[in-house]
Each structure stands twice: as structure tokens, then as C-alpha cells.
Length: 170
Image 1 (cartoon, one colour):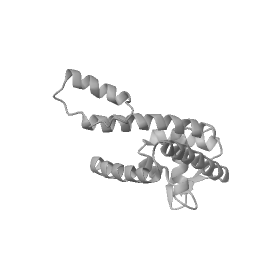
Image 2 (image 1 turned 30 degrees about the horizontal axis):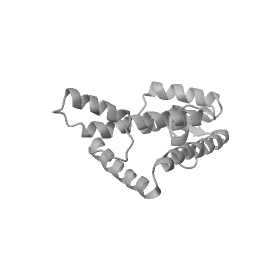
Image 3 (image 1 turned 90 degrees about the vertical axis):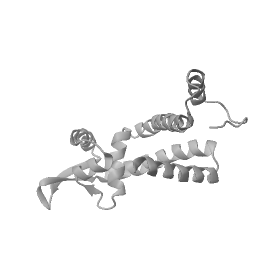
Image 4 (image 1 turned 180 degrees about the vertical axis):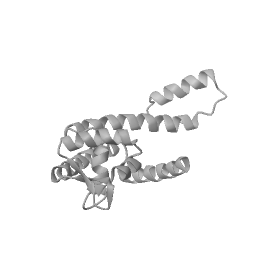
């Protein structure tokens, strides 16, 4: 990747420079892109963790509550549906559900359509909390994005990342 003179150097530039010194035959263009995506993901993950901690939940617990909220009324899914959506093992899901149920943010009940199944439903308290937490999280993301990019650039970046994600997940 070519560097423009007005761009500030970042830690990825240092890593790429080190590789260029010891392996000048490598094309590190992809490393520049994915290295920055990785570092950005970690940095924003830490910020999001702090935003959700104010509500007494972790990012993983936020994900469970947000998945239920996005499902629409009555904000109910089976543990299996939650596990599939969040790509979690049933054991990992059980731990999160136990903690969130103890906190009064969701409840588990028998599935009326399957005697062996359970349903997980947001409580009123859980609905209120997730609505506040998602607002706080979006505010953190918006602040970080607007500090670096105007609306047009942000839209362009979102479109490019959509293409890259589709190509790497496909």
C-alpha cells in the first residue's frame, strides 16, 4: 500500500517496515489492511466493554440481550436459536443465561410447543437495560467514527468492508 505524506504513521506501519527490512520480497498490503482491522476491533471492543460495564453487563451478555431485543416482540428465542446466532456452544450460552436470569434481565420458561424445550424471554427490566446499553454503545461507536471520518468517508468505508467481509466469509 502506498503511503500518503499527510498520513500519520501507526504501529502497523512499524510492523510492515520491519518485514520490509527482513523480507523485502513480501507484499504486505493485505497485512496493512487486516492488521489495522484487528487493532481497530480490539480497541473498539475495549471501549464497548467499558460502555456496557456501566450497566453491569459484559459484551457477551450484551450480545444475548441484544439478540433477544432484535428478535422483536415477544423478545423470545430458544437457547438453541441464541447459540446459533451468537456462535456459542450450549455450555457457553448456559453460563450467560444463568447470570442474566439471576440479574432479573431474562427468564427461562418451558416451550409450550416442545415439552423438552425452553424459551428465553427478556424481562421488562432486561428490555429497559438493553435499550439504554445499545444507545450508549452506538454513541461510543459514533463518537469514534466521527472523530476520524466524515459521513461520506464512513459510508464508503462501510461499503468496502461489506465487500471484504462477503469475500472472506464466502
